[in-house]
Length: 370
Image 1 (spheres, helix red, strand yellow):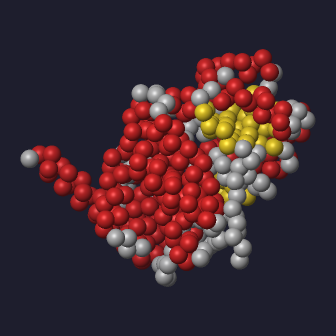
Image 2: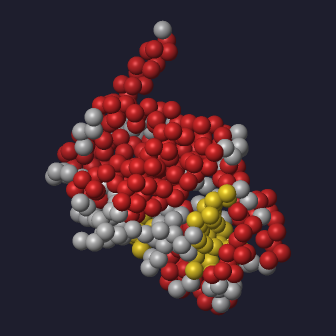
Image 3: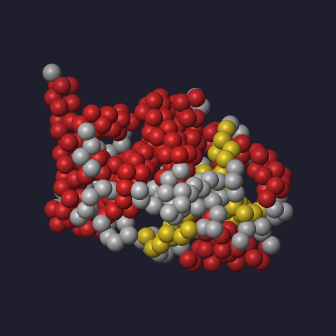
């Protein structure tokens, strides 16, 4: 087994960097096309990059779902218009559609996230859904994106819940990396973690604890502070390289299990991952000091610490067993954890994670009433 790591070709983060898009397109090809949601086309581009229109880069509206029908439509447009650079601008599904379409057409992709809600922008994998939005498959691209462009002005305008969700996704990075290192499990690029992957995963966690609360306040005021910039980098770059080059474990598997229950569908990826982190810590018998630190962080920035927080107030034991079974399917990353992982162990860990969170809320309420 070799050690392996993957990185995006270029990562550019700063205020006003959206205006660098035309030059970046020229660097990679001759004819670019932006794939964007209606909001991005109508509001983000006119406000943050009004000059783009003078460069006559066509903007194609994304139809809302990263599914085979939409991919065929986008690939047909790429082919018939001789597009050689596609720019995915928006949230996760727009970005994933651009990544898969570019891979199939063997052209360059530039990713421009308008929210910092997950670690997907830098990665060389993307997810397709059915036309109705049910998870279908993970697709691995031949390369990571050629460029990732993160305009802090755009991210600062987005609702804080996206940034917090991104911190939930990023919170998993170090714990999953640590588990993969312990068990010598394979990362997302088919090798063992490099030193760089592990150190970036750890830096991701340290940055969250140090800058998370302050970044949240900055986002609420639409201000760009050093802490805000650090958290955007942690959510997108550090977590992105960390998860791909160091590997996934319990948290993301438990997230996948939770999606089996309708109650969780109103919650973002990173919010469910955060609860998966807590369950993963109980599964691996993390020391109580670490539990206290991670629960405190989640409470401080508003990430879920109980089942009620992810829409599962009246969940039954049978439903939670279904979550546990789905988390443990063959090939799931939870098997990167030490020891034999069974649905019963995962079920117990979910219950413990919830009880620990409930007790802390109860004590907090009692203290507030005194």
